[in-house]
Image (cartoon, rainbow, N blue to C red; front, side, top):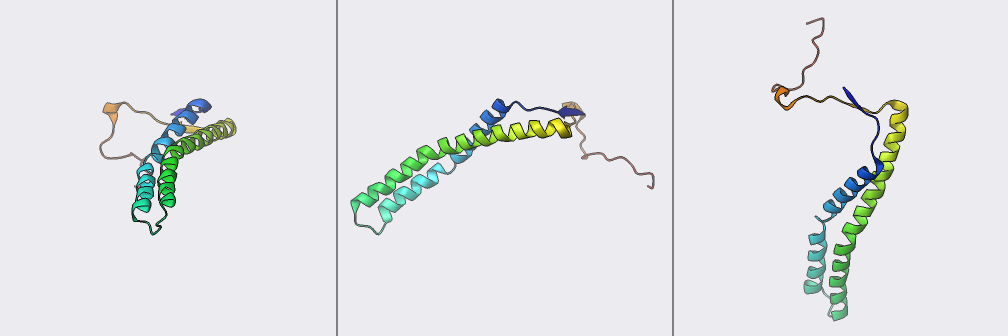
Length: 116
C-alpha cells in the first residue's frame, strides 16, 4: 500500500481550474444559441433589446469559462490545503498499485472467511 500524505496545492489548483474551465465550455454554445434565438424570435420589436440579447450572450460566453476556471482554481487550492491539513492528522488516502499485466480479470479478490 502507498499513502498519499500531501498534495501540491498549486498543481491541484491549476488542474481543477483547467478542468472547470473546460466543463464550462460545454455551456458556451447554449448561451450563444439562447442569445441569438432571443434576438431572432423574441417578441420585442425594439432592435436595442435584440442587440442587447446577443451582446449579453457573447459576454456570458467569454466570461463564464474565465470565472468558472478561477472558481475551480480557488476551490482546488482550498481543497488541497484542507486535504493536507486533514491528512497530517488522519493519515491520508491509501493506494494499492499493481503492474498492468497483473490485473485480475474476475474482479477484486476478497479474503476467504474461516466459515466457508
